[in-house]
Image (cartoon, rainbow, N blue to C red):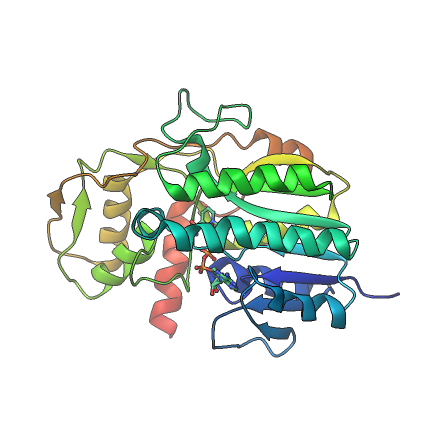
Length: 300
Ligand SMILES: NC(=O)c1ccc[n+]([C@@H]2O[C@H](COP(=O)([O-])OP(=O)(O)OC[C@H]3O[C@@H](n4cnc5c(N)ncnc54)[C@H](O)[C@@H]3O)[C@@H](O)[C@H]2O)c1
């Protein structure tokens, strides 16, 4: 039977690499469009380009794309505050462009990687998908606008709103996720800062679970839904620090500093819709996820 072909935008990124591997495991043909220089997966076809521009046309002219998993983005709250135009380009303009080509070339379905940031500081917890959207940063604004464009443009879609994604391979430099940043510093027993009291909490979801969900999004008959991708479990930053401290044998006390602008105080996402509609319950809790990261660091 003809293999289905999936375009993964941002396929060279952190979540992208796991998603590409999961697609290959499920016997899809995979095309990556990313502007990063490196390219590691020899089983996928690679286009180095900016997906927010007409460079993207060659991907559609030269291939029959059945599905798209759209992950390319500037995935950083603080960078979006510093560089709102770049945020607009990489998040909103890229989405409009990808959707426009998807419509022109009759793509069957698009999976979009949205974020818990669109709930801003939640009015109730855990946050379900009916919770009103709001914003604390340009990142949340452009993700929300992208969601609306996808709904508007008439292609079948699933919008996944990921909680805080973590796992091996996440970039620890610049505006990294808190797990990657703490993991790197604490592995080398270096001093570490916690913004605010450390009692703010998050819902950490392992990247392997996210990759599985992205692919399930294509395999399911469910269409045109917004679905949280989360563990429905809260972990404070102080608890995260303690887990890492224990696993890595870290010996220093953290330094508490001012809270960061645009950061959400409390976030836990209800994942009942994910379990019900996709039949998937995330498998890896934060403790085991971190244990696995430590194990693979020792092996490396
Ligand atoms: N990591 C998280 O915790 C998290 C949480 C919620 C949502 N998300 C979303 O998931 C997606 C993937 O995130 P990630 O953590 O893997 O980020 P990442 O930065 O590791 O990967 C993003 C990739 O997109 C590429 N890219 C960005 N703009 C591009 C453009 N205009 N043209 C071509 N390539 C471009 C980058 O080169 C990079 O390889 C993003 O849409 C992000 O907003 C991530």
